[in-house]
Image: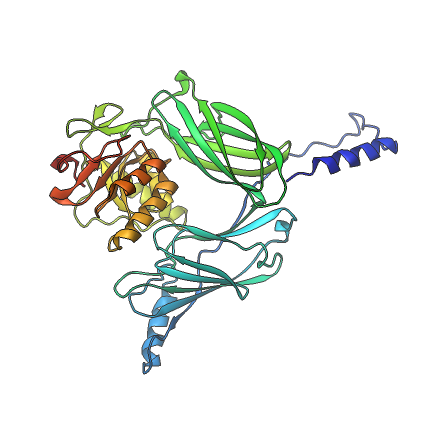
Length: 447
């Protein structure tokens, strides 16, 4: 965070000493060079080829069979999955740019998903463990990372027999100020209002004031800001929550719906004067999705829930621009064939972003085959991560959902349908309701 007292003291000393510079005349002035905008977050992708090794689970065992399995893993570095007992070790060597050095710089190692259980080390230092293969997690590696030198990242990954496991989504190292935006929860309506919670984390021991600027821009022209608001905040060490309200003018408001999927980018910029601390951007849309008389309604207009064909498989995710283009084309093809709704288990953020833009509805659920407790825990994490996406119509638990569990989901997202169960036993809770409707859900509403 900026040390304004120190800066003012230096400026005063310079003035007192008579430090001055006669401005150059127009003839002497050098031509102005374009100034690049300041960067709040630096990211170093760690995808691509990793070294891998199967851990032999039992003795006796044939090392030839383990070596053959190793060769298969090495031959497919982008699909590191296994269906066996035991563990797989992953190693990645990488260097961190010198420019990331800074006394107020925090380094975090982010994993989008690792199935199912992961132990993580960096340069021989244990970072910790994570269980749950459908949600992201991260570690603060400021003390263990070597800026300007080579780093060695190691993971030991295990999965139950019969379940797919591995590092199956992106990994990256990010750098930002010691005070940063941890996440944003925006709630929108059809009148253009945005009521949001901005969660800030101050990892330092210093309190101080800062400013949050919030802008709304069309996703197709993000440089054209339609609305800008700001708010002063007083940061204390630890977690801070700021409530923020803004709105679009009616002339700039275009509702999201499957025929016209109007998406806006909401960007929160966190700064102290000209000192940029952090920025976070996410897509939002203005719409309502509810149920009326066994009919799904988007902005009070009925829509038929037409799922993908049986056994249809979407591309796994986006590992680059080529993959993203293929997935974008796949979604457009589905929509052109009459599909309106995707039923997705722990989807990637990239897939949801493209569904927003394609105008496809999504019913999101945790992954299959989890215990009831693990499924509820995973869904809660998915709700917190994905609730800003306009494409999401409902959350779905295939297991039973108790009143306490429904109440917990409602605290995180009061505005969507929640479904629990399968087939004729499916129950439905309407937006804003903390109880399920009596009797089973109508067949037209069942996942």
